[in-house]
Image 1 (cartoon, one colour):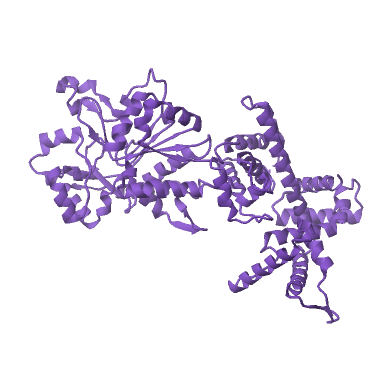
Image 2 (cartoon, rainbow, N blue to C red; image 1 turned 90 degrees about the horizontal axis):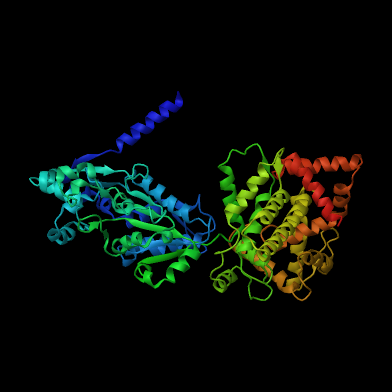
Length: 631
């Protein structure tokens, strides 16, 4: 079978990763490739960097996170550049616990999981390879065999920094059996794995009364204590706590601030000095990244407690807000739905986007800027052109509302309600209205939402529906207009000719009679009025179009009707206005005649063939737009 052949290839590939040699062999590897000795923070940073970095509007985008994390580019950039990058360079930041703090379902756990899985994969590559002393329960760096007194000279000679000491287990083993020839001590390649508890650990708090500190630091092995006679003998101790096994990699501290204080005290020394206390041993060295996460209410309670000041100073807080861009929110829903087997149910175009509009609106804060409402703010954040504002205003809006995105509807709630709509009996297709209805029903059943908040969210559902109304009209318009692009292009070129003549103060040549005539003010205003351009602002709007046209020409780019978002909207509305009566009659009639029926069938076919609709949702769209036009 083909699958068995693939499995065999995989096993052979995994087998090739194994390596075992002496300490002398390892030193030769180190000489050839010093990067194999990199510390855990540097390994994670290099792992992220190895996936590629792009820049967009001066902001770095890390491809490592692109497939799972959406709309948090600024947050991810801060995470990498303000924590992992300086920590990789051994600055003091690495002596801090990284605490991801934000609302539920905001992506905190996803970020940590990605780092853990990425590190596992990276350890299998030549760039991320690492090695440990064979038999060491903590898979520690073999260079710990180099005595402290020799490390300065070693660094000067080979340019390699050594940090940390032998664990108690390796120290006693060295004293007992390997003291004769240190060069022959065995070293092996370490492949990080959370399943095998090698370099990747997770600690989850539970009932403080029953949870044992041994889960973090290991425990006495009672089956061997009689043989060795002492609890302080490393051979009578299991170095299998999460802090032990996470050495060389990363440990996730889930809901850290819900933990009992005695567990948090172990992190004080680990974060600052790179070691921790276990059993009756001296401090044990550990090279690991500790990443914790918590919600905002737990964090506020934590910082209000004066007893936690020592730990607070050893924590770097990284706020993880909700995404605030509709297009990115849409990707979250698409990703979650793609993981299901609901391939037999069609989701109409713009249905998920409408849900995303609702979610994002609930997370935005009102602005004090004159003329800025939440809808405009949402569109501006999403990169759309908004009259009276520029993209440069986004930075000011973010500054105005620092904690924006730390509250609102979480993606988990929305996907739960979408799931409810998807599994409804007899459903073959769901549209935006089905999803909005499911969201509304969910609010009415939600026990933790008070009346005031429910009214606020219901208002956002109404706003999302209005946005969908506008989109649905455009969809029908596009389907109704025969050779839509050509019609739009004709209007666009006429408009450009006229505004160019207007702005330059010259006459325009009639294409048929070739006589020189004044610019067609009626035509220009019929287009501009579609998007609310006033008489007073028409000149600046026309000049703005010409400036954009000139900019495109300098860059060697083609300027068409869709190159300017507001002009595109104006032309589409103009087309729709010209066809409105035809559309209204055709979509709303209960008993269409042969001509109307033919047109309905043509429109439905265009929606299905070119716009992603199925016959069911295409028909529903026609009916819905008909009802809108008859209001």
